[in-house]
Length: 508
Ligand SMILES: Nc1ncnc2c1ncn2[C@@H]1O[C@H](COP(=O)(O)OP(=O)(O)OP(=O)(O)O)[C@@H](O)[C@H]1O
Ligand SMILES: [Mg+2]
Image 1: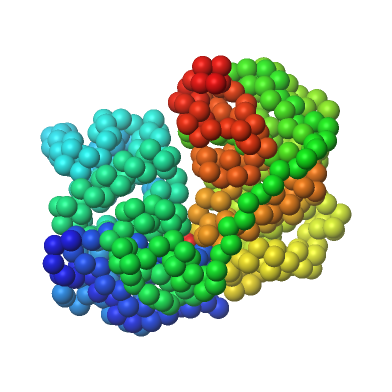
Image 2: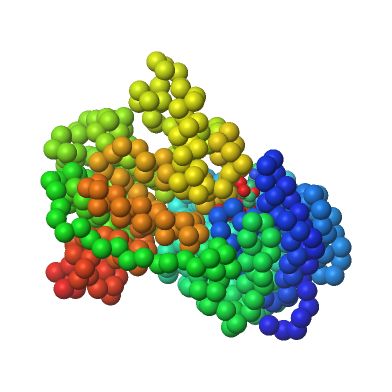
């Protein structure tokens, strides 16, 4: 850190939503050339505070000064003009445009060929200067999520941002991509940029931060230097109590096969082979972990075993029944539940209330249906139960889910799918975006489910999580299963090698 020059000072920021004080008189100072982490439980007010600082929300009270000058941020453009840029969790890129076109988009109409060439050269310079690897000519639809995030970062730098706000950037990254991002953040810090970083992963928070501010219930409950704290103290500050990290004993005996996948081939959305001869099975009372770097066929596999996509070859059996040609609805009827990785697109309807969303896909159950209509009282009662059991922070069951915080939206989907009567639960990135307390709760619930004889396919990139919960772990690479190992005896190094494409026979 250079000296104590202040890039941004927030004083007494208060932001209310119907039924909620999202930010309650928050003071926060961001120094020049520092990486400042915002930490807090789901719904603590982190994203809201950043949205205030980017002119998306107007605070009800408080003042903002940027580089010593008191400012009014009426629109996002005001923030950009002051050098403040934000990378949101869901990106807003145009898939059919190139990286450079996306970066200059919105900077004024009629970008000529010459100007585009100039822009391209500048994008190339910026990406070198900050170590942001991306091809300026690539089309956005060809990019991985990690690469799309880099485009968003370049877009902000292109507009001359000195202050960068990153809202849970690592939630969608592989461990390697996170490392590269940290490299970029450090390089920005060296060049005098100020960064606000949001994350729930305490180990990475300890690695990357200079200072950490903890929000609880919308209030700033403390700002600390990283060298003066540790993960235990931080959890305590966040939650206000001790968090116990449990271990999860496996079940002694397993039951009959619930899911059998045999020789399955499938294509991805671009029509290219995504799964090749995939074979595995999951028994009653078993958690099968599926490890792999994102984009190696996990998405397609999840869709094939939940009936959302048809395989081009092979068979899927649920409780012995051949599911060939069956639709998602038949899979649901056969007792298959699914928590997808994309919570916004597939899993919820933003404008609908929490209670509507909690019975989504279940309206045909006698409990919730009145003929073709929804039994409102049953839905509301059920939603109340989920709010309580899963500790969902919301003003009430009638709140549209679009106004929930990222983590609380995730809890709604998990709660809905985990409490539906089912034999097989397919869950992708179960604890992504959840705070430490919620993560523990979800892991415990998955474990209980196994002990009650349920079957789970747990798809994750988090090896620690897979090792602590799974009975067996299958590793997928380029659409093929590299091997299936017992979690009890599995070694992290071997799993890593298999994730990089070596077969079990080669690493064992
Ligand atoms: N547009 C909105 N309308 C109504 N309520 C909102 C809106 N945005 C946020 N809230 C509420 O404000 C509170 C703080 O939400 P915020 O998104 O800032 O939390 P967060 O700390 O970012 O949580 P997470 O870790 O889950 O992302 C929550 O109770 C949320 O439901
Ligand atoms: Mg948030």
